[in-house]
Amino acid sequence: MKALDSDKSWQLFMKTLFRNDVPKFSKDLEWKARDMLKKCGGLPLATIDVARQKAKQRLSGIEWEQLFDSIDLSGTLKSLEPMYHKLDEKLKPYFLHMSLFKENAIMREEKLEHIWAASGLNTRSEEDIAHSLFRHSIVEIVHPHPPPSRVKRCRIHPLLHMLSIQKAEDEMGFEMLRSNGNNRPSQSPRHRVIHCGRDKFNQFMTRDKHLVSLIFHGGGRYLDDTSQSYWKSFEVLKILDMDDFGVKKLPESTSTLSELKYLGLRNNYIQKIPDSFGGLKELEVLDIALNFMVEVPDIVNEMGSLHHLHMSNVICRKPLQVDALKHLETLTYISIYDWTYEVFSLEEKMICLQKLGIEEIDGNADVSKLFASLCRLKSLEGLTLRGFRFMSMPCLDELYVNRLHRVKLDGLLATTLPRALRDSLRIKELNLVNTCLEEDPMWLLTKLFYLCRLKLQNAYIGREMLIEFRQFQNLKFLRISELWNLRSVYVTHSHLSKLSQLEINNCPHLETLPEEIVWMEHLRKFAMVTTKHIATKIRSSSILSKIVEVDISP
Image (cartoon, rainbow, N blue to C red; front, side):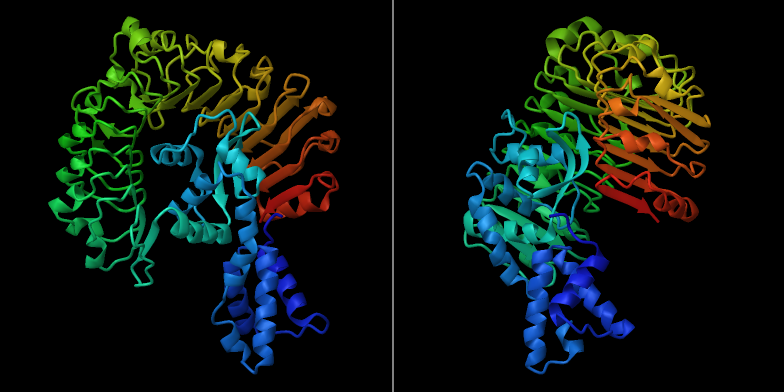
């Protein structure tokens, strides 16, 4: 069941609490009660359990102010246990590893898979694990990804997250250490999550030779005070995740983690990657993206086991020898000025590369060598080309897309869309960002018959858009955002549409929707972010009456 919003949760709570004559609380008391209900996460089962719990407590003479001070969800967790026991045995370990993530976190599918793989779980089965968890109502898909069996981003309900922690403590040696002292240590921990605040904690300096994963949440200066010997104590550590943790400097002794397979350092303040990291011979995933202007020494070629390298805006004194990594599947992002590899050797070297991101493409960049390289990358399926700031990218007409299923262009185009891109019969996902096209992109893309997913963000500066679903019979997801001049959208052949999700965000002059939407029988979800005036106008129309999920803001 879809989680209830705050108003519906409140109505269910009050109806369960009083049944018939529902009194009116003061504003302060209602605010306190609503704040307490947030911990139920909109889950009807939890809301009803808490209401019954409070009704019993009220009968014992406890005042309302005291009743709403705390909440006990242990009964709800017990009610959810049968769900876990009924899970297929092969899915249970994946559910347990959800305990390693933050509560309410939006999880990237690629990170989920990297963590699972580093833990020894199979991520290359025919059935997509994240989608299996979705079918069992374990996770909620935030952003769907074609084909329909894929998940791009998802989140787990807070109560199911609590259940995953509880079961992980029982079944896989999980322990959680918190700054407030509310710790649940395990006798022989194999997985440890540390929640840090601003204080310094000596009790976190526990050395444990059996730890397989070590995850840091929160922030503070905890890592600033670790000794060199601290990292040497983890003899079998395979997962070290410090994403969003505020890390500024990495000690050289981190390189002693000889069994490490996953190193997550995304979104920190790291200025330089230590030279000694070349000694991480077993490392399969290195994520240093969103560390602005981090210096990366020429050591990547020494990490022979590397499968996935995520980075952005890095400084390289010498071009990284990533072409020496025969197992590399993901490389995002590398500057076009560092793409200096011999074209004819790539066919034998980078034989596994499936996803490539190139950045800093400005008008001076020589794209011909890059395009010649793309012909040699036999496994490549996804490509992102990112411009440099507000400069125009050069002509991309010679772009090689014959094997590509996913393409993203992010930056101002000097001319129009590349010819090869417009004529491709293989592309299933296309994302155009900041391209500022003068021609209607829906007209330019009419030959992309197998296109499943299309996102247009500040991609078009025109006033009118025409969508002919005769040409887009496989399109299932369409997002239009930040088209600042768009005033009218016209639709033809809507009865042929297979569109299941439509999103329109921040198009301030688009005041009406095409009436043909009512004939789109597959359209199940519509979301719109616009002005208050337009939102009121759209809600009052009958065009969206047949759509199951409608979310219009404000």
